[in-house]
Image (tube, rainbow, N blue to C red; front, side):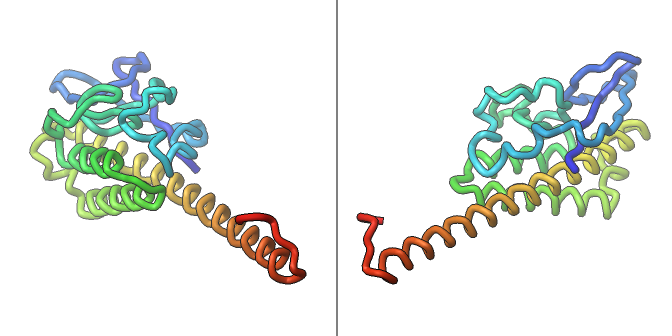
Length: 192
């Protein structure tokens, strides 16, 4: 199941790059099942940082690179800004990997790399020792965003792999059917 996040600051919902000023209050609430936009947009350049046609404005961001379409602190931005923290560095690399991806398998590989990085980040509790995260609240938010992003990307990869495998089976079945029709009874369907 895909996971959406709602970032709420001081009682009002808002999207944020979570720059973590000391006095700013954020809480992260996970809303399951609402993020269909996280699924079904991968496997092509449709999830790339350069595509601004997707409606991702309602989804949160993290640092300068975390969030769908969020690169360099803006929707569809560049790579000039440094990552805010360790986790944000994973998202920056993921954005670069997506930018370089030429095939659906390369986008799946980029997603799997991000999942692995986030899993290690959480398992080894790097959010506790990250010097950019100065308060307990910031560390909690970093943990929650990483956990939610990992779960969302796991669902996204599972969907993409399923679609890819189904497409391959359909292609193989069609080739097999055409081959039987073409060579099995002497019939030809042109230059297939």
